[in-house]
Amino acid sequence: MKRRVRNLLIWGLGIGSVVLLIGLVRFSERQRLSATCSGYDIRVSRQGGVYLQERDIEQWLDKSVRWKVGQVGELDASLIEHILDENPYVRDAQVYFTTDATLHVNVRQREPFLRVYAPDPFYLDEDGRRLPVNTDYPCRLRVCTMEGKATDNRLAQAFALETLLQRDSLLNAMIDQIHLNRRQEFELIPKVGRQRIRLGTFDRMDEKLANTVLFYRKGMPQSGWDRYAVLDMRYKGQIVAVRR
Image (cartoon, rainbow, N blue to C red; front, side, top):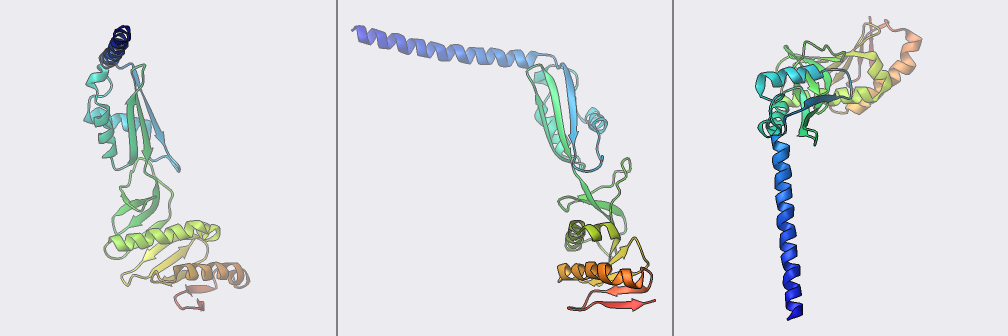
């Protein structure tokens, strides 16, 4: 009998503790939701240059949603996050309140990678996706000009070529422009010298770029930068240099 009573008391205390805990959690949540937003903190993370600033985030949100003034429960953090994720310059966003009722807005900007003219200008970002030009923040990037439409396949090849150029310190420093003609053939235009480097289609691109580096390191210092009008890398196993 005593054991049964003791078990009932333990069971009752356990249930009471759970009920009390639930009540405290609900009370705490009500208190949190009824608290007035004490302020906000906007932070933009980036890997390269400035393409997006905190003031831009503030201006966009001011036009789209109530987010600065009111109780925590009235300000929808998930909605704010969704609005930011829809912005073309935002890679991802995290929005949340801390215990002091401060709204935190953490945004990571999309990074411009290559500027494309086809013929209207736009960027490719670090994932190879189109990114509108933000005229408020000019970026110093290599340019890719295209004849004809900027199809997904053509953009993917231009993005891959730019990636290869950036991986080689000499080519990254030397090449000023990529050009893609209507025959799907690439040309490179260097910063120094007046020659054009014909690469042809994207096949064997690693080999063609390696030959370009070899010629710049071995051939150009001996012959001079302006001796050749065209460096043709289209043919397997050889470099064709056309004099002026």
